[in-house]
Image 1: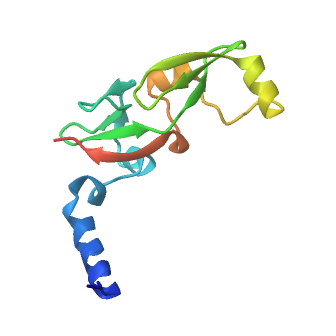
Image 2 (image 1 turned 30 degrees about the vertical axis):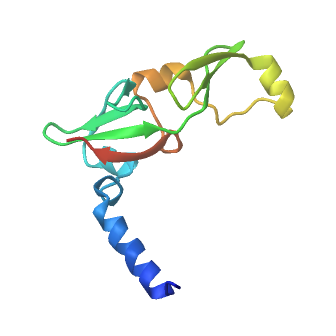
Length: 127
């Protein structure tokens, strides 16, 4: 019993349109251009960390795409998939990399909702 490539392609296309969260995914930059305001860091019902972008009646949940953030000159925080925070020694981390990583966001910025495009996975509508 073999399945043709056309059948697999058709099934994949139908599956994509039946998943409402993926079909309505938005970029945070697009939402901000449309006047959406970003909340402080929060968790959704599933426990994922992220931000709520809203413009009054429409709201989107934007998932966090950060695993390490800067807390201070001496400390970093690792963020697990479950949302737990793990303190890390910044000097040890940077010595392992061979120098400082300028792409790491500040933890205080993430908490306050001052996020940039690389820090967000995507935004899905809240029901």
